[in-house]
Amino acid sequence: MDAAAKGLAEARLIEVPRFADARGCLVAFEHGHPLPFTPRRTFMISEVPEGAQRARHTVSCSQFLWMAAGSCTASIRQAAEDAGGPREFRLEQSGPGLYLPAGLWLALTAFAPGSMLICLAESEYVPRG
Image (tube, rainbow, N blue to C red; front, side):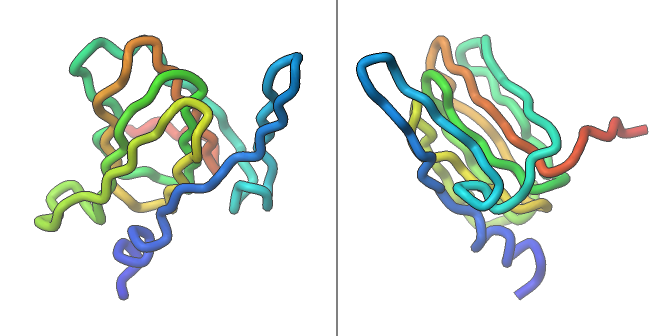
């Protein structure tokens, strides 16, 4: 199995520990539970216009995607031109997050109004060029 195929097989939903009581809900992301890596960068995607797509690129490092609000669909492939169908995951507010190993092609679509997607990345951003 090549590295991209292995990465596609390793992509998975991971439950996130939630601690809820009368005061609200607390969610924690920690290395080893539930994350299989130590995050070095965190970013958020929000205010996505209806019908717009995000990502549409190969992820350069391991990432964990989690919906803080709303929902979206994450489609992953071994490569952008992969003839096989994508694996699709519907990410919902406060639901499981999606672990993506480096090297997979990712497209984010079908954002609900008011969605906020949090991404924890294993490495810092390095601009191309």
